[in-house]
Image 1 (cartoon, rainbow, N blue to C red):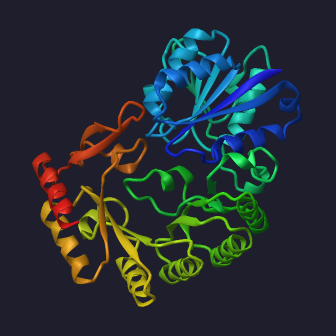
Image 2: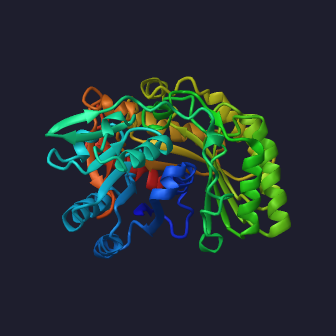
Image 3: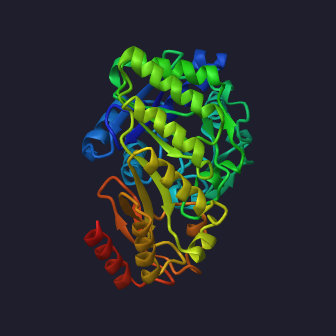
Length: 424
């Protein structure tokens, strides 16, 4: 049997490798793959010394390596791919994740025909890819959703349709793929997709507007698995938790499970953008169970011109204000999230926005650097927006932060950061 090694280099230790779990669970539903392949997973934090990660991966001597690629691990992934390519001549490598999607020109080598990129949701493409590798003729041209080089020519196959029926993907929690005693953090999806196209984010653009949901009973069973296995931290990975009416009932189920089993102890979620009442109810449910201490309110900017440029003007500022007011009335702690600098924002408007928040009794304000991500609308329009970036993130990451825009010079960027730190 051929050996498949799924590789996740994450930010946090002892976190469920959800992407790898989905890939393995979906692939093993195919009888031919069950008979031809065996699966192993390699997980480590991205800050693990590069030499150790490479040594471990080469020593594994797999036939197929699958890497989950993100901004925080891409430099490490590239080094590992180069090392595997030199040390293991028979190894095939597939890269997936938001950092590499539609970026074949950047991450593939014209002379390397053994490395491919998955350009969308991975489950179906990965399974078809493995099936293609069992054919001596290696018919990758017939696999939707791939980019690769043949005879120094870049080949990109047809797009893989999104999975509209998510329950076709077996649950890695409920099918025994995850070893229950290894994890302290569980990542859980109740749905996939985002209806917004915020300029700094790839989420909505990647999922083409539609939000598809997992069956509610499956989600409840996964939550119970997390609780029974005493996993302390639950991260709900939906783009807009609270957007669906069932999310309130799911929140109550989480607190009930926590009461029955003593876990999870902490819940984190990204709140729905235009559902202030639902978000407040969910936050109240979690706070009453001592599962959440503070709720983020993700404004990003208060400048109307900036909201228009980043396609966020359809998210009502009044909704955020309502969330803030409801949380304050219920004595629930919250913090406002901003991004500095966004296109259309000026140093004056940034300062003015913070002043407005203070006048409206915001409890805490956090201004994050603007992380410049692949495939985002801002990335696609970076020249006309005057985007200037600087590398950040250490040896493992391939991160860039925005330090200038058409409206903000590099000196003004620095002054804005000084202003925020002094204020904070």
